[in-house]
Image 1: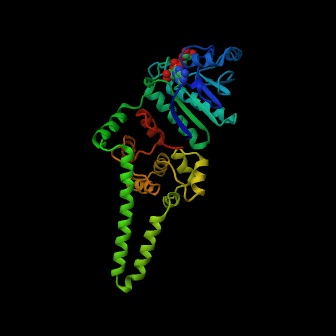
Image 2: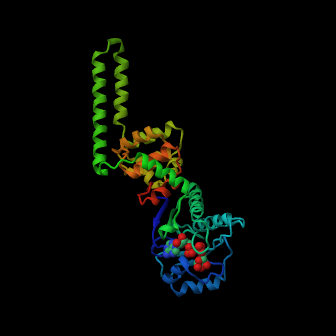
Length: 340
Ligand code: AR6
């Protein structure tokens, strides 16, 4: 998954580089900075002292010492002073410069804390938006595994307005009737029965058709049968062509990495997970019916008794296809994220 949001302690993450929310003197401190120095050991502080400091928005590189990460990219976020002192722009620089440095070093993976969202008092909702925005912009152009690490529940906040609309939608649409497994089986059975009925009807129509219509009816039947037999992968690739999109555009917007997409492309019987199938529907910007069709090809359905499904339905109905923001919302509800 090119951008992953997880709740964890960044000092425990095995990636090529972790980013430290440091101060301009690079002498260690509290928060994530303190935690990183504590695990890395004295060698990190000595190397930082030699570097001598780092201006706000810039980055400095050190080794990871006793951390599982090979490198630490130190950046200094702005202190929030009301928003009139270029705080947002400076915070954007922190993400951009860290990612550019990782790219120049040829790194494959990097993990960020929410810079400035603790001691430096940046409004959490905005700090998160800037992080997601800068990382997703970078991922539109480059390949990297980026993890946004959220440490505590209160550190993470999504827009209250968006959260309230999603919550209202859930209140109006979520049905607590079956457990998810039961419902999926039920929906799956319904789908199979629906297909069978359709085929049956088609055969009946055909048997009563006049001879002049026979040829076109049987072609129609053949088309429909072909469509019904189309696999997930075939259906997906057809949709991409039909909509005039490119593979890369779709897998990037789906938060799916290139390798997984090539697997789907080269294996016509590929069986995706439900999260991957939905991610691709979002990447393709399908409407609700088209999403249901695509999911059906992989044996899935959207159910009103799954909060995850209802949230997805909300975003699709609203034609809101930013997968990273959808993931922010799923994360808020402790649900699994889209992509792979
Ligand atoms: N792993 C991941 N995230 C963490 C961890 C951790 N182990 N610990 C804290 N966070 P902060 P800032 C989160 O205060 O606002 C230091 O003293 C935390 O919940 O660490 O940029 C420096 O020396 C919050 O969401 O950094 C500077 O003086 C986020 O990390 C100053 O604080 C950032 O909080 C920098 O302040």
